[in-house]
Image (cartoon, rainbow, N blue to C red):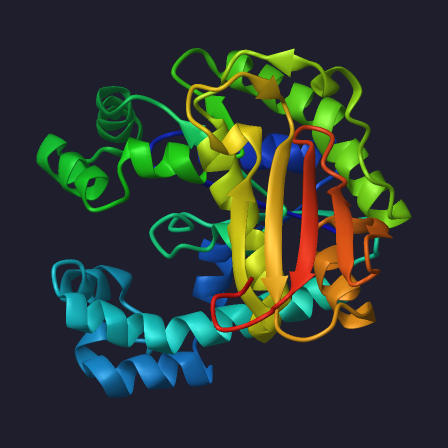
Length: 320
């Protein structure tokens, strides 16, 4: 199944995008909603929170007092780490349960407010970031949610900045204008990339290079695209990975090249079926072997970002 991470700063309009993706057929898993479920009355999660922070974070009926808990952890890094240590494993387990019952052709959108802050991008085939200028987001929070201006600015400042989100984004959705504008972007993404990506993934079919096989002017986004793909490949390879690098012409700043991201992975031990299976989970399928037969070539199935990966066994401590 195709896994898409969806995120955006508070007030950017992420919920609008998530709703549209659900209308188009995506299975949306809302991390905030799961976070509420794991601390519902009677759960071991709520019990753990109460033990860590005291009964002062509970209401009179024994449910979680979110405002009181928020006041405890908002400006206290150690308290926030304690809370995350309680919530994150439980949210991950509940997420895995929801994924386990989905059909193999599902397009899953994981709505995660702090995806960038928690460096979760390499867990998904694609990351969608909903963007709106800071001042517009603050205006929405004040007008739409009734926040005081100072509170809105504080909430915005506590999250990742726009540069960090852009670096994490495979797709940046501009929600600075009217709602219909961002919905049109979502529709194009779904029709032109998500549906074909899922089909290619399920049918184990690498994407066609098409016009990307021709030389084009240098694209400043190539470096970030290569870094994101390298991180996903490294995660998929797990303990077998020695290193993954963005190589070839697109790795050279300012150089005209084919619009194809070339990557090189070095793995510990021989390249066998386990490596192929791990790379398949990241959306890279074997396209052939060459030379002595120990080096493998894999191609991405993402129609929106053509990439070619060569995999080599480690020859020594340097990974060469």
